[in-house]
Image (cartoon, rainbow, N blue to C red; front, side):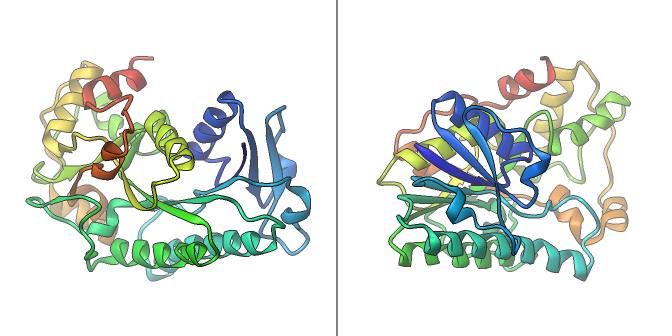
Length: 301
C-alpha cells in the first residue's frame, strides 16, 4: 500500500513509518521541510502545508492517510496563547489533510486521525469505552471534540474515518523519560493522591493499532488507543520503580504541581480509566497488554 503520514518525523510518527515500511508498504511523510530529512527506499518526504508545496502532484495513488500532526501538550505552560496554538495546530493539519483528499485524483480508502482520551474528561471512578458519547467539559475535551468534528468531514467525502484516542504513549521518547527522572534521583513516588488513573499504551501498539485500523475495513469512528489494563498513578509508579530498581516513596504534592504548572497540571493530577473495547472486539491483539512488560521493554533495553 501507499500510505501518507503527517507528523511522521516525530516520536510516534517515526515508529509508525518504520513499522509500515518493514511491513512492505511505501510511506510518504508529509512535512513542511522535506529537505531536512533523508529518504529511504520505502520512506519518502513530501512537501506540505506551504504555498509552494503541491503534494497532490508529488504523490502516487494513496491508499491511506494517517494524521498525527499537532503541537505537543507538554511543551510549555498553558497560557491562553499556548492553548490556542495547541488547538490551531491540530485543526490546521486536519484541514490540510481534507484539502489534500479533495486534490488527489483518487481518494484514499481510509483516514486514521490521531485523537486523545482527553475526550472523556477526568474521573477517578468511571470507566470509559467508545460507547461513552458525552465528552468532558475541560480544555482537552473541547480540543478533542473540535478535532474529531473537523476530521469527520472526510466521511462526507466518502473516506472511511477512524479517530484513535490515544492515552499516554510509552517509549524511549515522550512522557516516560520525564517520569523516570525522579526515580533516577531516588525521589520517585506518587503524584498527588496517586489515585488518578493512567491509561497508557506502548508505542509498538500505537503503530500496531494504526496499522490494524488501516486494514480493517469495518473499523470506523472512535477507537481507544490504550492498553486493556490501565493503572492508577501509585501502581504505575511502584511498577516503574521496580523495573528501574529504584524506590517509590516520596509524594509530589498537588499544590506544588498546580503552582508550578497551572492548568497543565491536570495531565499529572487527573486522569481517566479508558478501555479499548472496540479494538479488542475487532480482534486486535496487544503486544503489551500489561504494564510491567511494557516498561521493561523500554527501560531495560
